[in-house]
Each structure stands twice: as C-alpha cells, then as structure tokens.
Length: 370
Image (tube, rainbow, N blue to C red; front, side):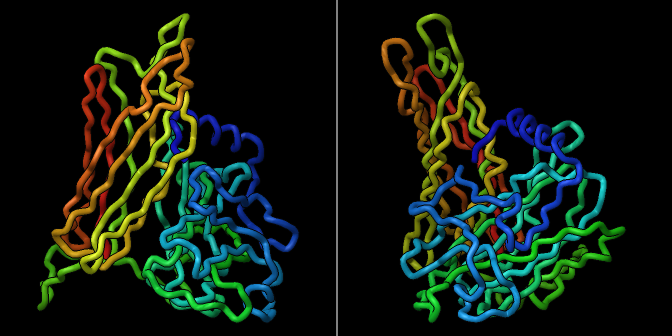
C-alpha cells in the first residue's frame, strides 16, 4: 500500500480518463461492481470481503439479498485490517456528492468501519482523509444507514476499512455462523450544499460545531485517552556516500524495500502489539510515501503520559548476487510518542538511523482521541 506520489498520480489519471461517468453505486446483487479487496496491505491470516446472502449472515431475510461481508470470529486476531477499494475509474471532481450506504455489525463492538476519501488536487498530488466511521456507534445486530458528504474538490475514489475487535471483547459464537461486518446499497447522489447531506451514523446525526476560544475545564482531569491513531508519513534514504544499490554496468540509486512496522502501547498495565507488513517490492525510488495507507488505530484506554513506540525495520530485497549487490538491513528506526490529552493537535515525529555510509529517516503523525 506504500506508493510514490508520481505512481499514484499516474494511475489515478489513467483511471479517470477511462470513464468520466463512473459511480461508486453497488447493491452487490449482480456481483461486486467495481469494488474489490485491496491485497497490498494484508493481515495474517488474510481478512477478505466477500459477497454472501443476508440469510447467511443474520439467519433471516430483511430485504438486503446479497451483501458484502467481512467475517470476524473468535479466532480472528484483534486489530486485523481489511480494505475494500473502489477499483473503477475515479469520480470527476467539481461536484458535491452525498454518499449513503447500509451497514451492519452482527455483534456490539466487533469492529470499526471507516470510509476513506482519496482525491487528486490541481497539481495531481494525491491526498486522503477519513470522512466517516462508526467508532461512536458500535452496537450490533441491526442494519443502519451511513451518510457523509464527499466534497469532490478533485477527482476522487473511496476505500472502506475494517479494523477487527478494537475493544478486545470476547466474540461469542453467532447463531448463524455469520459474525462480522456487512455493507450494502452504496449510492452517491449530487447535492447543491452540505446542508443536503448531514453526516449520519445509524440513527444519529453528527453535528459539527465551531469551538469557541474559551473552554470550561472538566471538574475531573482525564487520565486516559480512548485511542491513538498513527499516520505513516515518508521514508527517505540518503546516500552518504553509498547509494541504495548498484549493478555491474551502472550506478543506480534505487531501493527495492520491504517494511515491517511494529506498534507497541500499554493498556491497563499490559503491553499490546500490532505488526504491519508492507509486502510491496518498491522499485526505483529512494523516497517512499505512505500517505495512502490509512492510519493504524491503537485502542485503549491508554494512559496520558505513557509511551507509544513504533519500530520500522526496513530491508532491501535485491537478489544480492554478484551482478547486483546491496545491503539487506537498510534501517531500524524507532519513534516514540508521549500520549497527551485527547484533542491535542496531531504531532509529526521523525526518526533517523545512521549507518556508516548512508542514513535513513521516517516520519509518523500521532493523534490522541477520546
């Protein structure tokens, strides 16, 4: 899921040129439309979306027919991640769109469902942001409606993310064997203003307000935050003086890299961990951009003042033979973040690893949430 800005721009521009009228609409009755599992970031074991009958999920038919479903059972590792991406040509910008969809969690607190909006700006630079999540509406057992405004500032697409069991609950056996999260009836419609598309999470309207300059302090100071999100930034390799690798015939400053990212944090005195593997062979660049990878969510409660520690183990996976050489262990970078009060501005932290003949840096942005 780690891409270079120029590669992403090229791919998105190519998609956009194929079909200007593409939509994200799908009811999954005749297949997945232009939605597919994203295998570039893979949990172990893989956690995939699939089309199933509503009866197979709920044990009854409430009119949804075929739905797209992520199974989450007692054997599914906590914090496993699954991505469902819109693979069709991107949607042309310049128009406000209201996105609606039906969603179902079979069990309360079984997982977070999040919608990510990706778009290109006028300079063909690629950006992303989280626009909707059920983090505040995690009860289960019934279909609900989600709705959010897509501003359409640039040509855009969507990715749906599921993070399993963020609250570390014991998932009971489901009577139909269909524990998990389902999605159905994805639709977009043009609107003239944001007032025509308030954000909905189930039956609730999310009201966005402007915070006044003066705030009333809480009578009891908080001691924990609900979760910490970690947005990966960019990895940069700098020759000093040795380039990343070389061939017999010419010098190449290229890195074919793989990343193992180990997150560690403390919940109620117990260390938690989550390992993320970026399996891509990344060619012909010394700078790797991670902005397309959605933030990793570290669930709490996490004590204010405690440390979140992220270790980046970076390896060069060239063949290492006599024709092409290089070094296997490129970098081992550790970034530590001290958890502040929820609502504190996001903090970008850079880590660095100095080798005898090169050095590397990695950035990550941390945010504490209620």
